Amino acid sequence: MNRKAVSLLSGGLDSILATRLILDQGIEVCALHFTSPFCNCTHGATKGCGVQAARSAEELGVSVTVRTKGIDYLRMVREPPHGYGKNINPCIDCRIFMLKKTTEFMKEVDASFVITGEVLGQRPMSQRRDAIGLIERESGLAGLILRPLSAQHFPPTIPEKEGIVDRNRLLDFAGRSRKGQYRLAEEFDLKEFSCPGGGCLLTDSIFAARLRDLFRYNPDCTMGDAAMLKIGRHFRLSDKTKLIVGRDRQENERLTGLSLAGHLLLTPVSFTGPSGLLIGQTDESLIGISANIMAHHAKDPSFPLTVGLGKGDATDRMIDRLAVDIEALRI
Image (cartoon, rainbow, N blue to C red; front, top):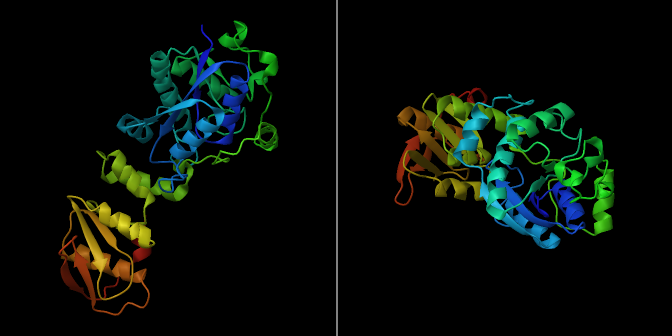
């Protein structure tokens, strides 16, 4: 076993502190960051978790490799062997998935063990003692996952037993309080961290409903389909058709950019309001319902409406007022 480790660096405080504690023992660390469409810290090119992980790695003085979880991850989320938490969060299987991918990366960089920022008892599903043991066994990394913030609550890992890591310099944090982490961050003068309470949209009830809807009506969905769940208001119009309505100018522009084959862009012409994106099969009835939903979220629309269909040289269409139970269609 050598003195080189892989750190799972999320960009959050816990993983940064765990990495720093091991760096301070003179151990070489390569950081690994996983991206997915389910991070609720992703707010553009300068504020996403991947960007934050890169900033944190720079502050720590380590290199970071970014890997996308990919379609195999989405399949796991759809049918997780160990089930979901409160919403559609497969926390145990997510950890197993990432650690198996980490094993592959360890071989690439010739590292001997893994560092994580996990704290015993902090997360109700994946950071219980029994869940941690299960994750270790199924990931194939038993004895090789070091949790510097909570190490004193666990038996010594292999790097501790072999004297590579000084166990006496590891900590005994446990539970949901974060006072110890903030104190340590101040002591280390760390500035670059985000999402202190966790940033996974799979734990959000609204997002979970949208993802369940996607899995039900589009079983062959892609990561791009999943990423679109973060944009706008969503409405299920039929088994084969969904509508997304923008919430602001930025989202309207994103919907325009996402208008691909199989999607129909609807833009307001005679009124000021949101754009809509019809995904799936369309007909005159569904276009009329969509325009009425757009008008519901507009300011003082007057009927009949005029909407543009398509991008570029859009075709204008007159739409009459319809009785639409919008809340019944909302996902």
